[in-house]
Image 1 (cartoon, rainbow, N blue to C red):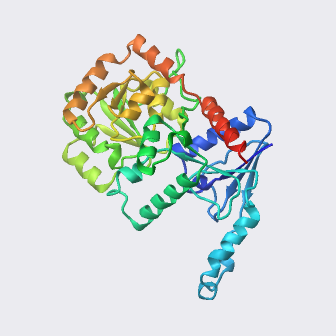
Image 2: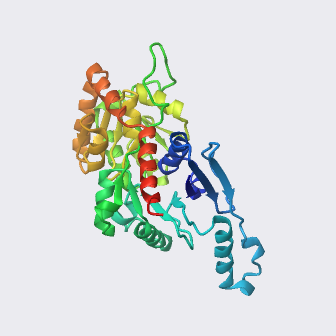
Image 3: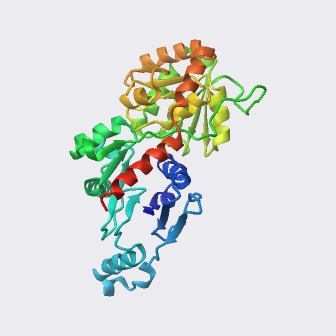
Length: 377
């Protein structure tokens, strides 16, 4: 029997997103692939899960008691409070003998005699320390470094991430494994006669957060000075409302009537947008992988992507690429995409390319890594 302990902390802090989706997709699939696999999914905080937990008869949800309410007043417990927390964790989690630990977000058990596996999705905190410079950010970098250094196997979601992990942490190539991600099965072309709700005008589509490295500001700049904006709107699917700076820019640029923001839409709604968009625009300066690229291509959507290593690795020759530091280059790419939209050969090539990625493959490759680690236990 292969015993896996997964710290499900990501499900308690993330309502939706790429990291939590990895485990939601692969944990049940690995149980289907290997009947000997048993997974204990830990919830170690008083926070309730913010999304449904992966479910399968071979997955057990384990709630580790939260003892802080009993360690009061704090001045009496002092440093002993941390010792009590570690003791409770150890009693519920065990010492790990003969088991594998895999945290969803770089946590480590206090005592663990088994193997540890860690997944690195990107190196944003390391590449952009000036953007992540709060005390917690530095603590997180140290936590991540320790988790990687103690792991028997480091899973990287792309060769791009693997190279960054090796460069920043000095991890040997024999310890790192590339396991690509995939897109949900719900993303596929609309059937003949099938229609989805959409904006009244043709539109470009942006999907994702709008933080610095996502390069959303460049998209706004390029779109605002693109002649095609009079005929083609921009639809933004993101996780938060406009910031005051964004609202001011849209108003001053007279773009507010051309740019629509959608928050918290489901996969079926997103599928409809992909299927009917003029193009998905993916302007990131850096990505560990880029699931929206595959989602769009699986729906037959033209893709305009920044020319960065991970996009080349994931999407191949399918997108129209542009220099992510040049608004002028992006405007030219939008013109090319407008000409390509609806091209049946390019559409078929994108759908075929996206089909090379699947969560079943991701689950199978991850399971193989677990088994290789288990041989040393």
